[in-house]
Length: 452
Image 1 (cartoon, rainbow, N blue to C red):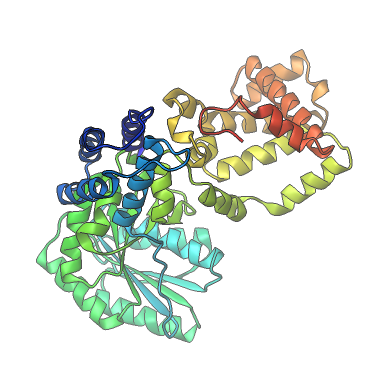
Image 2: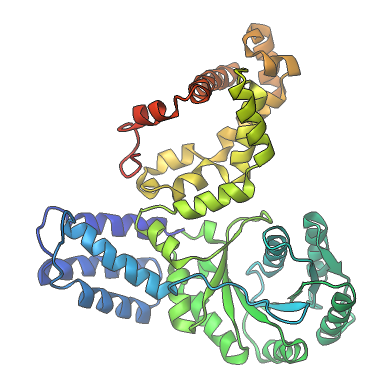
């Protein structure tokens, strides 16, 4: 997300480098480029106009203090304005209601509502320790009820069975009664979507809202629709008192126009962004962190939170103790590390959150995808326990067998063994207190913006 906008803004701001002061002329030239970048990102025109005017007012005549270059000073102004446009701070769910707190999900068909219900339920269960029940009030698409049932089973939350023969209001009221009697903390209600906004749909969901009085009413919208996402959200908000927006499919949106338009057009905060189909691919929306990512400054805070949430700390602790005892870092250990990386979205997802990661060439990001990682895992899985523990026994015939078992080539096995040897050497240094030396040796070898 934001790849094209980030690249364009980075190139534009770089043009200010080497100048001693922000003047009316260089700010004007730069803002022309910023305006074009935002329009190409499909940001709504009123938002672009207000953004550019606000940046112009703050940037004109600003002295460059200390060692700051004009580019850095301008980045600060643009960063602050991006944060303001997207809503300043993360807007958390308000679940301070008599249990069960009800969350009503609204949106058009195909926006990813049902998948988002499951993602949100998993987040509330795992991160907030809530007892969650989900129910589908979509009586027009039988597959929706079955889909939610399957997803609920996968993530381990309670599913309230419904039928296409029932009325949505009756389904919601019955689910409310069941959630109360089983002491649920949260009830998430999935509603019917349409291919377009229509009066019948709005009347039905308004009636449903009045009946269950939800603590949160979230509008789920496909970010790839750009500024249309903001306009659709506004239309829904006029018929339904929305409390927030969830942007979905952000992994397929390289522009980011929806994220920059929704807050200003609707006045409602973006509460979550979803990327991918996995049930853990939902994260709270932090305007300040997103602004940093747009401007190529990374999002280290989110990266740390992701590591804390998704890394298997027991495995990490066992590996640390193993290294401290001087035991070898074997291929089974390497597989564990690779699997945890895939669980966090792969190397490319991590690179995007690192400072300077957005400036890396597309070829590097493509190579950092998890396809190669999954191949390495397949190779390790194709080995015997002895081969994983003692990689030195892997010779000609064994390599052929391992490669064939994973559907790969012998050179892939050789590449894996080489990478394992390098990582084993690094782990050995770390276990002997050589972490500081290793970090120092890496200085200057990293891409721009990723220095230590």
